[in-house]
Image (cartoon, rainbow, N blue to C red; front, side, top):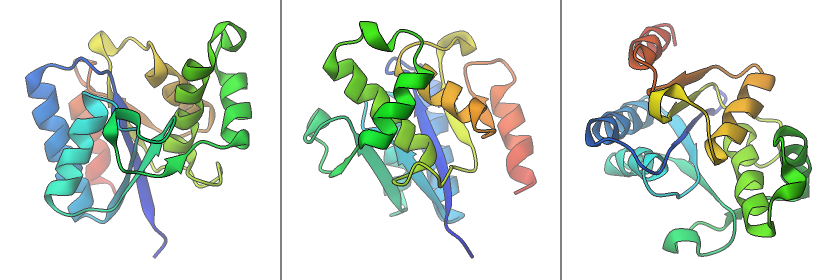
Amino acid sequence: MDKQYYTGIGSRDIPFEIELKMREIGKFLAKKGYILRSGAAEGSDSAFERGCDEVKGEKEIWLPWLGFNDHKSTLLWDKVAWNIAATVHPIWDDLDVNARCLHARNIHQVSGADCKTFSKFVICYTEGGKTKGGTTTAINYAKESKVPVFNLGFKNGLDKFREYVKNL
């Protein structure tokens, strides 16, 4: 069987109950053999990763630069991801280099090292389901690439995700 990936991302500021749900989702999906793709940011990324780690699941943690948030991962964005991010982000030319690095790493979170091996789905949290920040780049890229996105910030986001998982 081919490896199955999912993207677990979202806002840095998350309610405690959402953090708990993300950790449970991370554990559940790791036990099902799914490989987490995330980005070592505080909040959502860390919650999914902690859940994954609790059951020793596999993960790909993509960084904008080595040592980001003291993470030990060595997975960094490449030129292909940079170029894709430039087409996805609406104001790429206005971003400084650090912001561009953050957005380029988000491309790999959705489509892997080769930018062609897409996650089966994205599970995320943004307050009220509104897209903002780096999560927007990943969400927009996923949607453009026909990857389902489940946002726990929507009132029915968790229910839609549970329904989807039943059919996996």
